[in-house]
Structures are given as C-alpha cells and as structure tokens.
Amino acid sequence: MIASTAFSVIFLLVIVTKTSSMDLATAKKVLVKPLYDAPHVDNQNSVPKITVSIYYGSLCSDSVELFKNQIGPNLATFQKYVNFDFVPFGKSDKKLFEGRWFFKCQNGLTECMKNKWQACSIHILPSKLQLLANYLVCYMSSKVETHSGYQCTRNMGLYDDYYGKIKKCFMNREFSDSLMVQYSNRTQTVLTQSAQIPAIVINGVYNKMEQDEAKNNLRNVICKYIHPKPVGLC
Image: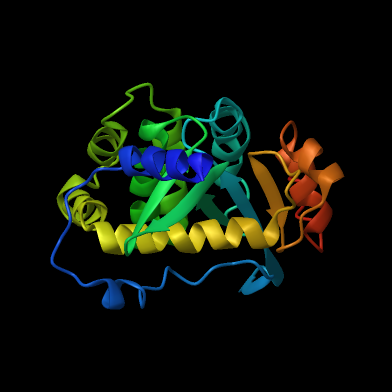
C-alpha cells in the first residue's frame, strides 16, 4: 500500500502542463500517423522499402549517440530504400490516475517533456523526403536542453509552418498524453522486457544480435535487408 501510494505521488509530480478543454473521450480516439512495423513497399528503383523502427528516450545517452553517429549519417544515403520510424518512449512507465495519464521517465521530468514534444513533432511534421527524420536528428543532437524544438524549427526553416502546431499539440494535455500512451503500448508490445534502449527493429521484428550490430554499424544491417543491393551503397 505504501509503495503504491508513493508511486502515485511520484507520477503526480512528474508532468505538469497546460491542458485544453478537449475532453478525455475525444482524446482517446486520437490516432498517430500510420506506423511502419511491417515492410512498406514503395516502388523506387524497383526496390521494396524496408522499415527501420527506432525505440528511444530523449535523454538516453546511447539514444543520442545513435541519432548523431548512425541515423543522421545514413538518412540521405538510404532515403530511397528505408522508412525510418520513430518511437520516443524509451524506458518509461505510465499510470492512469483519476482519469489522467502520468508518466515516469528513466531520466526524469525533462525527458518526459522532450519525449512528448517529439511525439507531437512526429504527429505534425511531414515524413516525406526525410523531413521528420532530419528534424529528429537535429533535436536529439542539440545541446540546448529545453529549447531544442524551437532551435531546430528555426535552423531548418520550419518555424512559420510547424512550430506553433507542434506547441499546440504539446500543450493539449489529453491529446499529447494519448500519443504517449500509444507509443508506450507499442514499445511494450514489440520489445522484450530485457531489451535495451535504444532498440533498432527491422520490419517489425526485434533481433538482439542485429540490435547490437546496428548501434555501431546501422549501414551494414540495413544492407542485409535491401534486395537487390543498390550499387555503390552496400
């Protein structure tokens, strides 16, 4: 009983954001963009696209390194062959208390806020031409702890069209919470309890050996799945 009460108190303190008048029933109907946990065929150069799903936490140092050293350098190279799919929940937990969701993140309150901002960015930004992926690489690579979203939209010329929309999503608590709940459910469904974060999942299947390789050489793992092999890339 004591442990349960303490857990509830911790969650109550974790996330405090403005809420809109949107009711909870409406929020539960929110759907994130189509997810790519299965091979998605996009006929470019007669090569089916593969899906690389990244399960990560915003302040996880290994996640930051993955974005900087593996995802960023490979975006342009493989844009015709790979759908990059992002799941910003990491090693977090959720609890429903008096009709509201509360989140507890491995690296504290700031990580919860940054995970939620990225969930809204994924919901708002176009994924075509790797715009979303490049924005998330910028966000994860930024050294600015609390204003990465603002900085990256400015740097990428996205501020006028998208920053206000992302912020509106973030400030709408029921809506943004519902996005996080879906990413939580997805993380728990796809990954094993022992899976490390970040996790790299190819075509919806988690493979421990490929996970370890992808963290150090994502290019090699991607090339295993592309058929026929693109000349000069693999």
